[in-house]
Image 1: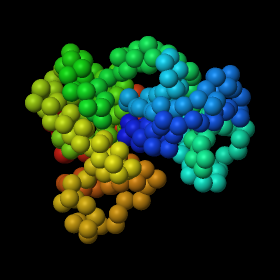
Image 2 (image 1 turned 135 degrees about the vertical axis):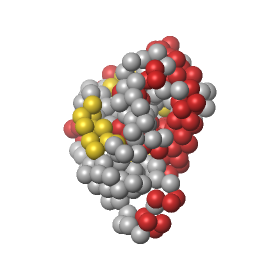
Image 3 (image 1 turned 60 degrees about the horizontal axis):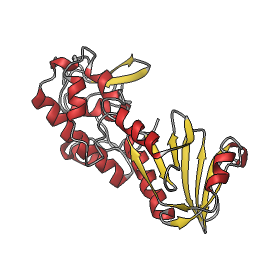
Image 4 (image 1 turned 90 degrees about the horizontal axis):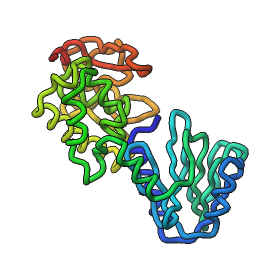
Length: 272
């Protein structure tokens, strides 16, 4: 499932290509055909993201709400279509001149009102990329919870947009045991974690990849090979199970937690 920085990049890309312009809207697959017909030929005002939710604004009470889920893909194409999938899987197509947005396999693609969009945002947790979010809403839930901090960070009603990679990496960067209960986290520690999430996710928006490794642990500084992974970027523990920790050399551990693989260093993250 894409993490929050990906959705914000998609929102920026949609606004750049289509914002303030008349667009063609269709649903070759047919599952969004009625809604697409209502929007076809109208002006797309812009797009925004909140956590893992994407909202495309076509005017008062006409908002396309997209959640990609585990398998959804949104391709932004300039020039001839290059997506490897065919039209029979194309839920939503937005087109203007040479620009195309192709949506396939989303968890949600629905037309909603402005009020419904506001309700989705209100129910979501703090999004580190949104400037109005301060981490206070997340702290209110974390400070009262007996759940593990690893579980809480993945809860989209606590921290919106934080996924498996950022969860594992920010806990490592602050040497926090992932099984530590939220209510035992100090306010000072949470402030540091939140500030780090703000920096890391916004860098992800800027660079289009997840990098969490500090300069002294980068490949050129350590004389090691760069990481090769479809997610890109340099990380400390994510998908490095059994490999030596970049800081202490202890093998990285993994365990399934609430259906997702959790990664951590048992030595660096002993603090409970």
